[in-house]
Length: 59
Image (cartoon, rainbow, N blue to C red; front, side, top):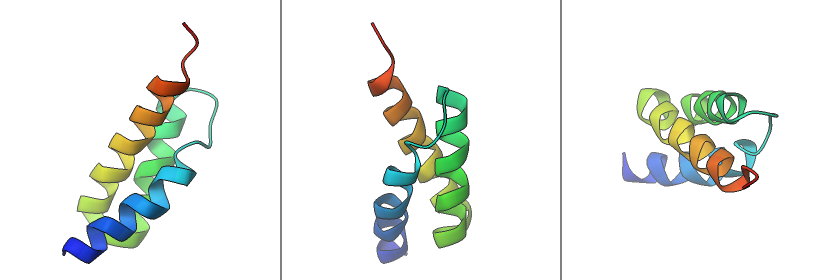
């Protein structure tokens, strides 16, 4: 389970940058995480997408 979680993070983080809005980035990360590690990966990928979206948000 731990390896799958690490792989989900490594794959979902770059893919989480895809999209124009925070919601799109979260959705892209969730889908990528789900493909790799199922529901746990979806949660991790969604969180990674949200974090990337927040970091890229203009101030």
